Each structure stands twice: as structure tokens, then as C-alpha cells.
Length: 425
Image (cartoon, rainbow, N blue to C red):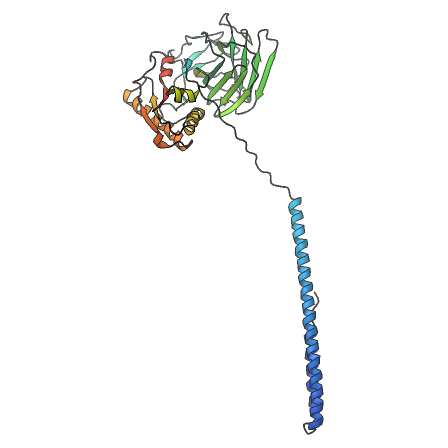
């Protein structure tokens, strides 16, 4: 930076002026006055000139500094912008949302929880090429069929007569094997008019063969000659070994969707040959895959026309709202069914409803009545808090076991009596 030296020159000039004035005698008044006047005027002009030049020069220096500063700032800003451009951009996490679209049907077609079978026996409605027995578990209530023989099949000895659109659900604890700690097993939905005890890999006249493994899901649709296959596979949210899993399978003609732990894990629109009239169910094990336990098998019709049932008929029975055992806590897989009700209510703000909870006859009457009331209240709370339905449009009641729609003497009858009803007021 250029330094300003003008003030030093002005000081020197002033000192020289004082020295010259001291040389002139006081007695030489005229000469002194003349000389001093001349010197004074000259000094004054010189000082003014020097000061002006000093100010101009300082102004130029300051302007130069400001220009340099602006240039430096500009260069610094440009450099910063270049550095920002050169820096690796922060990647924004991609979030994708999907609708959980499963809604259970309003008609129960078949239910099996092995409650009619003695622990230690093989269940009466099933057959096998190997062995198996009904057991209880420490991590879940009820009876469970243990598929405990390798390279064997387990077949339901009942023709199901399923419609084109239906839903199949079951609970499974997929035990891991001893060698590598992994698990896998299979279920097959198929058509057959022959012997129930069919141990072929792809039984009957056509169907769909599903592999449930710890690493994912494999689906194979096959036709009558069993020479052509329609395949699909995914690794999304597989079954977990040594834990309780709830599997939901939704069949719509050639389309299969599978849901597990609140997520749609399979959606294959053309994985099954049509028409296929599914009427048989089989579980199977091949190789060293571990031995699963199954229970709470349920077939229902596909999702009902909620709008028509509630608005036109004035009543909707739901088997798709699930609770923890002896609890009013709603399970995650119930969200689709409750959301369906909420859509109808939000689109028709003048409609008011009553929610009725019902139980089977197992257990104490008073406890069942209290449980049914609390469950109805839980459904209302979900409609209000999560789906923004006005609370004053919903009443709740619980009737316990007092209003059965079928006998409580069978597993299927009890399953039909465990329900939530929506009544238009």
C-alpha cells in the first residue's frame, strides 16, 4: 500500500519559515513587514497547495484501496462460489410413499386355529406324508401346528371353493435350522379334484407356489401341464425366523399381492394362469429349511364395497380390524380397513355411525363385555386422531358375546363372532 508523505513536507516548510522570520530584525519594520508579508503569503499558498495535494493524493490512495478491496472481495466471492460449485453436492434422501391398500373382506370362508385339536395330536382336518403335531408356544397364545418333518407336505383336507377374488391370511413362527440358522418353507394354492395326499412339487391342475424364506419371497404360477411357469421374486421385508409373522395374501384372478408387517412386499399382476379355480391349500418343506409352526389360517372374500354396505345397506361387518390378544390395541394391518371407513365418512359429512364391538364366548362374560367396549372406542379414536373424522359423528358400544351371528362351538363360528360392526344412524 502507498504511504502518504505530504504531512512531513508541510511540517518541514513551516519550520523553515519560522527560521527565516527569526533572521529579520524587529527594527526593520517596513522591510520586516514586507518580507514577512511576502513570506506569509507564500507560505500560506504553499501550505494550501500542499494540503490540497495531500488530500487529493490520500483520496486517490483510499480509492485505490477501496478498488483493491472490492476486487479482492469480488475475487474472494468468485473463488468461494467456485469452491461451492466444485464441492460435492449433498444428496437429498429420496422418500417414496405407498398406500397400504389391504382391506379384509366381510365374509369369512374358512378359519383354522387348531383349537379343536388336542396338544400333541396331529390335527383332524389335515393330512401329511410325514409327521407333525399341535403345540403351544411361549411367544404367542393358542395352538399351533408344528411342521416338523423334512421333505414332507401338509395338506388341508377340505375343498375350499374359493371365488376369483379372495384373501388368505395366517400366522407363522418360522424356526431356523440348526446348520446355518436360516429358515424357508412353502405354501401352495391350487386346483385339484384328485387325492388330497399329493406330494408333487406342483400339485393339481394348476396353481401358485410361494416360497417364504429369510431372504425374501418367490412366487411361481403354473398351469395344467406344469411345463410353463410365471415367476416373480422380491427381497422386501421377508419373514423373520424365531419370531411371530403375520402373512396376508390377496388373490385377484391373475394378480397376487402379499403383505407382511404393514408393508406390501409382493404385487405381481400376471403371475397366475387364468382361469384357475383354487380349492386346495398345502404347506411343504424341502431340504434342510427349519420347521415352522402355523396357526390362525383365514380365508375371506375380497374387500367389500364399503360405500354401498354402509350408505345403502346401513351396516358393515369388518373382519379386517385386528387387536392384540385380550387387548384393545389395534394392529398395524388394520389401517387399510379403518381408512376405508374414514373415506366414506369424510366424503359424506352428514353421516353418523355407531361402532359395535363383539367377542366370542371364550372367557368371562363381564371381561368380554368390557373388552368389546374398549375395542370399539379404540376404533373411534383411530378414526378421529389419524383420519380426522369428527368425534361427535361417532358413537361406540360393546356387546361382548351377547350377539353371536354363529354358534361358538367351532373355530369358524368363534372367528365369525369376533368382529367389529359399523351401523349407520
